[in-house]
Length: 327
Image (cartoon, rainbow, N blue to C red; front, side, top):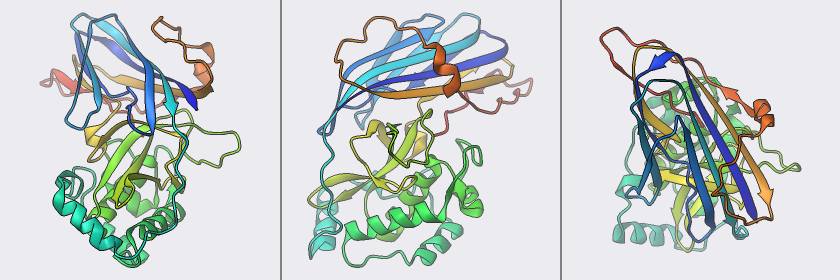
């Protein structure tokens, strides 16, 4: 299956800023389950774009706009080929906990086992783990299937109830959040309670017409991957109670959201900014190159999700952090 993806990000400044420095992580990964055939990143005002890969193999593009501007528009376009989803059983065989521990001892998983910025144990998280009776029993896969369902049933999906930098306790206290919150809570529980390596996945989800996905189709998506014997890294989507399928398109992996925001940067100036994000994922049977500049379609106005304006920094602060895109 092929998917065409267009991801629009627009920062609108109330008064012009004199410089913007930005990193983006919007380039889909290529691995055994998916292959990015083409990728094109366009920026306005025009600038030179550089790229590198981080230590986890994520594509990172970065640029500097050293001239005065009152808006910054980033359009990422990609064409991705997805392999058919593998059949996932309900459980693993006897001795799978012991095999998991052996594999963890023999490899380097410490980053995905320790607490991280947004996946840190708290008393509220411990209470939730007790409520779910989450512990090592049966086999790793069946426990993860159960946790995936429990999180889906326990929390409501409600956009704008949390922010990109909200701690997990906010979602835990309201029993509501977005896919970013679902992922952080599952990661923290899996690492602390089950001692299974678990990581954050940033990307896109294609919403089929016949599907019952409750995450938003016009936004980026987030889920988790846990390391299991026989299968390696397996994806779980607690927001939609899914095992990751060929509709889940991965752009970046990390310890949590702090490692893989779609955009991350600073600007020079004292002003308010408004962030607009729109994502469109569509099936495609065409494998033509996307090297040519493609205009942003007019109907994107119906896909726009507006975030809250960033407050003005104090007079002594000349650089202000760009608002991140919540997933």
